[in-house]
Length: 430
Image (tube, rainbow, N blue to C red):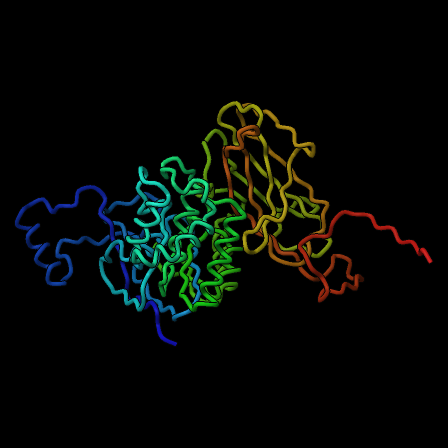
């Protein structure tokens, strides 16, 4: 099978602050060196792109010494935390920007969808933007005309096709942009996490289309997402980025497991939540501690099946809050939310005065054997806007060995993640 994308020693550095060297003669020396394909003689040794610490250099390496190959027809996912270099890598692969050093060899025509509305003109209608965006992506006018009805039908914007796109919602924007890119006759399709803007139904439709493109037409897919379930369903292989470097590459399930394990390793012995664990929020309150405990109140990471599990959470409230909602999320190994628990089962909001609060959650449901993690959220009840949101933190493993050593459980026939707290009745009717 031929290689579609080959990346060797790929690095990308960004200057913080001024770009010039300070003198005209040095600027000319830099220009002459770069013109001849030589290294920049004034480039300083920089630092890795670690957003959690302050740097001392004015050079930041967004990518450093990346090597990989992707074969034609393969579907590759790219995962990593914010700031890991995923989007920079896609821009380099899409030839939007140039590498500082290293090389990229690409065989085939590329269609890329990196940002919502890229290549769209807000004053033009949807119809006009299909032709404009298609031309930017390399489609001929006859090719666009031939596929116009398919594009409009897939995007589901027929009613508004002659309306200026400045009046479109962000979801409609991405629907139309994806539809144009997906119908381009290209060998390589590159998609950043713009699909998160669309609704769940359209995301499913997009994933189905990318699956079809990969399996039926043999198109090479490169897909960046924070949704591990989407990566798992679409991609057979995966690239894991960490602080601008390649941290792992291989079979999707193994790489996702490595990523989630590394992501949750920030948990200290005493359960302190670092500020960097927050995905987003307003700062009005911050989760500062989370511990998974056994029935004796001792921190624990591995549990026997049937063993009682509790979670202790501490929330620092920095200003008085009215009508807020605190939630504990249970996630599987792929980051999918399995359940959300709340302090009030009637879903009533609570008020919290400024101070430090402790929440203790005692789980009655029996978790099936497997690996899990927890997420946390505190949000304004009526608007739904997050005050603090921890996507995934504490890890938890439930073993196949039962807390009751006498239990003979048919593990091969077990499905699902937890045992419902239900009541069955058996009655013979004949």
